[in-house]
Image (cartoon, helix red, strand yellow):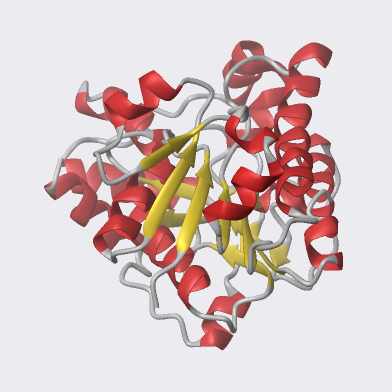
Length: 306
């Protein structure tokens, strides 16, 4: 059954791939953008572009008959040093979007059936000695606090009887963007290697599997609550760097000391220097089949297509 789907943050790494897949699966897709003209140049003609101004009219919103909201909006946490000002931008970009969506879509004649939100494994903190599943309590630190508030902001949807799904996303692997694309440069220059101690966990996921999880959550009513969107076989940084070097046929022994990363990034260095071992317990319970469970298979696929 086709759905009428609204996506926020659709121009990002995940959103652009997800939009293409939903169109391919014959769903009707609306994207919410600050600039209608810019978005219309990016997306194919099958995509309907809306602005926040469009959503100010309750009658118009009701007429759209949006069945599914997918919220991917949020400032990139690796987009700068974590000054107090930038921390507030990171938090507000997440909370305000969810609050505005609830204001626009609740209390109308045709409220959505499901709200699917991007969240993050930062919820569990950066404890390298921790193995986390969905029942694991919230960890400590800035990202853990932001993630908890981000998820709680969707409570009005739950209270209104909307099915709410949050995907706590790990390190997304895609050669066209994100963390992997940034790591390719030093490796291709024969200067790649582990970052920091090398003992920190990389709880990763192939972009194709992540898109599949989102589409499953759209199309299968059994999805509800929190899900760790990570591959079943997380690896330590040392092993990740070795696998990347092998896939590229490049050496992987030029270690970048943690102190260098901390000088460059400040508190934000925790993104790459810390990390828990996060497992997708609920997805496996649902019977989700990963196409890429092993890091070598994932990197070989992505870099072969590069």
